Structures are given as C-alpha cells and as structure tokens.
Length: 210
Image 1 (cartoon, rainbow, N blue to C red):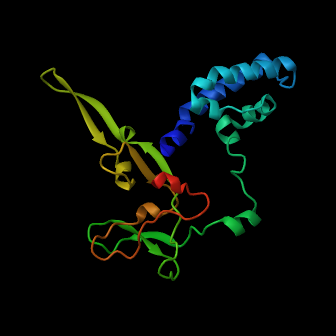
Image 2 (image 1 turned 45 degrees about the vertical axis):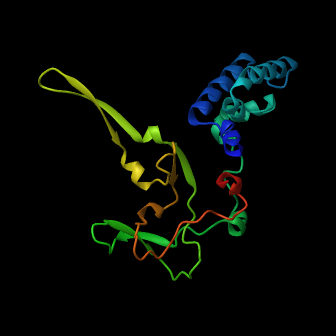
Image 3 (image 1 turned 180 degrees about the horizontal axis):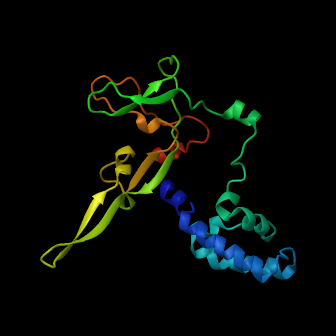
C-alpha cells in the first residue's frame, strides 16, 4: 500500500522531540567535534540503532557534519531547508491567499463567513488549503466528573476543531485546512458557489487518492 508505506517514514512531533534530544547528546559527547572519525562512527551507530523506527530515522540528519545545524535550528526546522523562500521564487511559484476575507455571513445562523475581495472567474482557485493530518482520537477530550453522591464517571467530548476538518466517518484520519480565512467558508447544500478540489500542482501526492 503506497499511502501506508509513505506514512511510515513521516516524522511526527514526538519523533522530532526525541531526535532533538539525540543530536544534543551526540553533540555534547563529541564536544562539538563532528568531523572526527570517532564522531562519524558514533553517528553511524546511532542511526543504526534508530533504524527500527522509520519516523525517528527520517527525523535525524543523515550526516554527522549536519548535526551542528540541526542542534542550532532543531531537527524539525532542519528537515525543511527551503522553508524560507526568496521574493523571486514566491512570484513564480506562490499562490494568492488574499482572495477572501472574513465577515458576517448572509446565511441564517451561519455566523461569520468568507467573502471575495475581488472578482473571481468560474474555475479560479479561491484559496490554497494545505492540510494538517490529525488522528481522530486526538480530537476527543476525556475528563472525569465527580458527583455529590461520591460516584464519578468519565465523559468524552469532541473539540470544536472537528467542525473544520474533512474526513470519512470510518476513517481515523482528519484533514484540517490551515491557510488563512478558509475556515470561514460555510457549507451550502442548495446553492454553493465554490467547491473543494484536489490540487493538480506538482507538490500534490496524487497517488494518495488511489
């Protein structure tokens, strides 16, 4: 399964926390001298120990020479070296995110909604919406309540976050769009004037839809 194999090697926040600890301990052990034969051998050994955990291994620098930068930035930031782009790159590859603004919805009981800031043609991209992957179980808050008779019970409630996610009822995965203003877009089952579609850009993993 392509999707399952891809996910095995995508580090989570806890993996980066653990790898931060590993690179710091390694850095301290070799006293910052990462270019010695001892340091290179030790780093190779550390990565071999982490090989049983694909996500942890993927969060570690592959070369000991990169450890100083990972220590300085943190392994999460180190893993995305192109997180800051030049204005020229953004002009060529970026997408406009100010096509919509929040405002009071014209739909009854809808609260606030999203409104166009300029004329848009049919088929135009209104706003890009990168998706944050969330485990469904993480959207549940469990708490214990004690009653006057001395008994107690555990209750489960869903976080408001769930209202803004896309998912299938039988899926354990929630997809949360996190670009500006997109969460103000309300649903209209009768006369919708916009729709959600998968990106056709080169960064989109189309094989995930199979």
